[in-house]
Image (cartoon, rainbow, N blue to C red; front, side, top):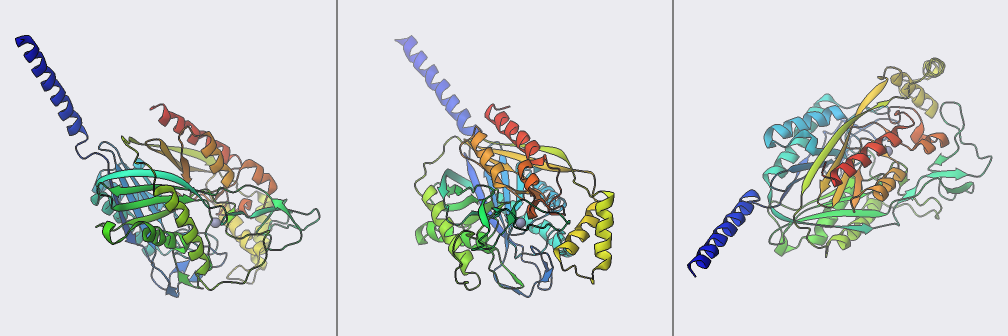
Length: 481
Ligand SMILES: [Zn+2]
């Protein structure tokens, strides 16, 4: 009898000390925090996203850095999605460094990306738009601050996810055309596919690639059910239809508002407020125009992007509203740099470009030939090789990959199919900007996205090399290596 009591006591002591140790280790359990920071540029600054520069005349809607920090008690991950067309590695490296100094989160655990709105302030030099140095300094601070604020806002949280679908708003924009259709490129040659062939063009044959209709969505809420954030992803270049010279977050901003309307009500309003985030998936060859469809009446500015935002938000909402809570989440981050070759112009191409630029009336280059001749001369001084950051984040059984380019949809579909994590999705234009990332097959077909410029210069085998690294990192995560 005495021995059994002793044994029982011993078991109790062992059990409670074990339980205490467990509790202590994950004292706060899983936590999440979200925040936004305004990144609206000054009126008069440059807007990029076009071949010719435009200046900001008005702000239609403020643009933001939207941040989410996840914390499993051991590891913290930070994500910031910026309402920008593209943003350079230099700017993001500085923002990460600042955010790391305040939060202690290692920079390789941070992902910062651009949405690809074409109505934002210029944050890196493309075509005839160049950034204001003062705007870049402002961006560094505001981007870092979004992440720091999300970190400070952390609270015990539940996480759930689901994959929605919206297949009516994404279209492959590269088309095979009937034999004999002229498809000139600005280098004096002919392509085999045409980007944006024109609605009701009788010479269209078939799209040169697939689409990805998925809307993966991660949902964070407090332990008493108040929505903290949704991080969603969709493979759509952008929508556009914004007012001339106006700043707007495009459908990404409208999505953030709409998903909030669907999820948050008076009773579940959180303080700090809910943050909706739409990241860009793999949309290098995908846009919002139904090329084989009928010409429709043009809509008022901002109407189309609101329609798209509503549909995508509904798809995201249906995926997460009843999604089960994911428990015992373990977070992990892997980052690797890859060195890739640059497609530089040869002596003959430089000579041709020099002649075209010399003949141009200027100072603004007007024709595609002139614009690409100017780009050829700028590419002449590019380094022979560039280093790119590739990342893979593990959030329990979900994985996120990140690539600093406008990634062709085939690459995203391959990642999703081959990844050992279900779901997996990619965030493009992340951690820098290295132009379009077509597959080797698409380089052979030519077309706008392959035309050498600061918007397309990586070696033709870049996609294969990037895929190999990302799949290896995904498998390493799976094996807990
Ligand atoms: Zn683009």
